[in-house]
Length: 283
Image (cartoon, rainbow, N blue to C red; front, top):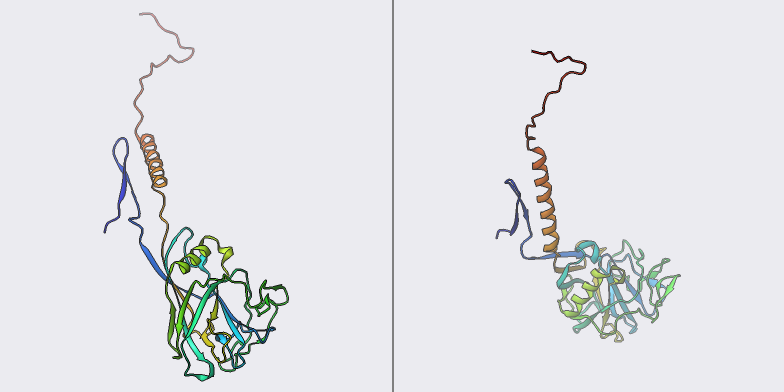
C-alpha cells in the first residue's frame, strides 16, 4: 500500500512533496530480562541474582521463595507508543522433589519499589542453589529490597495485591510457559513505558507457596539458551498532521524565496552623466 503524501505547489512552478507515514501499524518485539533474582523466606540474608534459576514456591520445609523479574521497557519501545498486547515466557528448569508434581498456579504481581540484583550463585547449575547465597550489598532479600541499605515495607516484597496474570505450570522441564496478554499486563507495561521511574518489574508468587515441595524454578537471563522473554506488540506514535503541514509550508516558502533570488534582475536604464570637469561645446 502506498503512503499518502502532501503536495505543496510553489509560485513560479515546482513543488515539494512531503511523504507522510500511512495508517499506524503495529510492531512486535521480544525483550530480554534486565534483571532477576530469588528471595527466600527462611534465608533472610540470602539472594540469587547470578543464579540460572529463579525459585517460586515452597521448599521441603514449606518455606516460600519468590522471584523478581524486570524488563527495561523504555529502552526497547519508543516513548508515546501504545501497548497492544504483552506475553511473558519463562522456561521451567526444575520442579520441587524432581517431580512428578501437581500443576501449580504462578501469579504475576507488579512490584511497587526498586530492588537490587547481585551476582550470587553465578556460574553454578540450577541444582543446589535453592537456598540462595549470602547477599551482596544492594541485592534483594526477603527482608530488604537492597541489602544493607533499604528495607521492604512488607517482608517478602512490596507488590500490588491483585495479580496481573496467572499461569498454570505443570512439571515438564525445559519447555516454555506463558503468561498471556490481558488488560492488567498491558496496563503494567504501558505504565512502565510512560513512567520509566515506576518500572520495578513483577514478583512471581506460587499460590501454593506455603505447601511442602511446591516450588517451580524458572531459568533466568543467566541461562542464555532459555532466557525470560517479554513479547510486546505496540503501535508507535506518528507525527501530528498539523506539524507536518507547517513543516511543508515552511519548506515551500523557502523554495519560493530561493527561486526568486535566482531569477535575473531586470535591466534598468540609466542616463549617462558627463565626466566631472568636462566642457560642453557649442555647435
